[in-house]
Length: 408
Figure 1 (cartoon, rainbow, N blue to C red):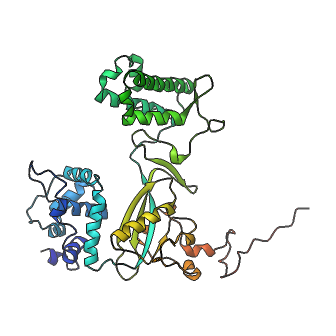
Figure 2: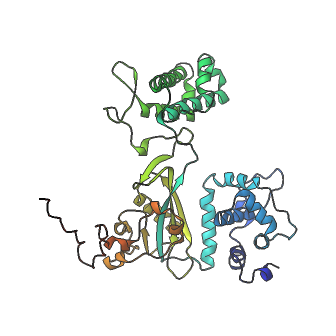
Figure 3: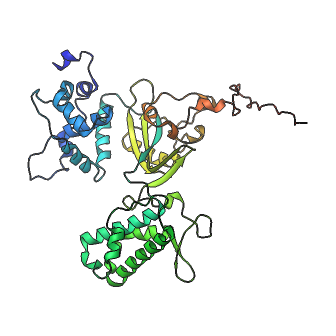
């Protein structure tokens, strides 16, 4: 029935026909305990997660496709009357996927089967492209950040060691930190709020240091200390002062500045004059030989403020471990494009100057990435910077516009 209704086949049907599935249930043996209720097929859940990302489906839409689409049932080897599973199962599966580097292990297994099928091989050209990833946090002003850091530390202490707050938290603290802060960019009495919040954070840490020093190692308490240092400084009289950009105290760089107490690893970054985000950089490496479909062979997540070239060494190390060593690798997100070719290893071929001028092959990862986060084609490097200028001939400098005579 699946072949009759889809004579040309679909992506789901090709995965079963040409790869016989990407994973087996035995690959997930250490993900679940031996006792408890019977589990669903982990290989099926992993395959549904891949199709969900590929087709842009929500959890509810993905489970509905499993229940209704015949090509999904063909791929998962389900009977036509199988009702599938509840959409919340996908959330639990993703939580397990984030533990102990399991996502990388699944990628290794999938690449091994793709290699057996001849869809990916060694000694081919690779292309690395990066795109920005947004952190699941709210944008906060500096005053909101300090206030939320105090509230997060109090919430953590109240859950785990409520007795530590008996002699500290009063009714006024409950009014200030009893709910998520919403102050905006123009709060009322900002200087008073800055001073009060800084003093509260200082009193909280001094109280824990004096009475409960073992609690200073709690995650949110440590984050509070870092946020306090990056926004305040102590003057010579021992008083807390607010850091400003225009004085000697200064602010830390974006690479060291925490932007949310709920994700201390997220960073604020800017690319060009348009793209600004809080989060991370995702680097995707894929094949681009032109003889076979483009296959993603490595995914690396880096801080948003990191340079694109910093990830190349790790990419080559992982590709060698997977026995997918490339002949050459270029990065389309670094600026300028030509010097980003990796010349670190002997098996990496450095391109000639003529090849560097050529337009790179089409990449599906580059097409999905935001135009603001990827550099343009290398062929645009020969355009004249003058407004409305024509493309400069090879080997010539761009022509400058003629100077106008001064007014009389």
